[in-house]
Image (cartoon, rainbow, N blue to C red; front, side, top):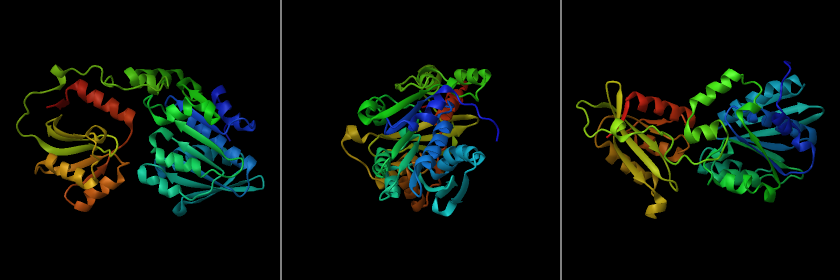
Length: 355
């Protein structure tokens, strides 16, 4: 096995559980800072060092995310240490054997509000929640409640969101009350990133997303996501003739606001032609999927819509659109930082305009 290098912060993650001081560990901070790799390896080593024939939970926004980010990173290291894997893909579980011990790890996707039902009823000796800030609170709290085996511990990993996020307020700021160890990561804590790559990441972001993704701070976006935005450059008073290739984008929400945008194309330029917005908190009324679908139809206005791009966590609304059979429902690629970079490029180049 290739010799691995760990930063001092990663070594803290690998060793924290050897002292019986904390009930949980929370690794937060910058993207590409090496926290997921260290946390996943440490979680498996802890489970195999202290338990035999117990069950554990591996959680991410999707099952594929668990396999890619947790199993995919930890498995080569553990196999190099002599552990043996048996993965049962159809049952979303993996069995790890070594040192005369055997434990089962169940894979859970916590991408939407209905996900908590998948973990409900399980009895676990520990749970690892990857990108916990992106999971619904209902799923995270259900996963926590499942850890009732003596000696069980909680493992969290997340990139920062806004400072009002419940995970930040209750678990990071309230770490002492939760008896949790918080380990904050920056990009410099990843020994696999060269100085040139670190500098490249620093150039990719500006404003609050530099603070979030490079410095690892929990900070509000508050309108500064596109600080160069100027009405005179990016808003048009008149639409060109011959718009076509219509799409609708949807950022779905029931408690949070729901926003839909109608997009038309002329040449290489996309125009946001019209939009729908509903904030249930301000309005005091929550809408159903059927009501949102009716709003979608009104927004389309009889146009030949090529696709409706929807937040992939909105499983029920995607199913509603497909059931109607009128529009093609497309799950969005939910990579926030990549999306912000792409929109910034299109705005700066004049290829994305708002009517």
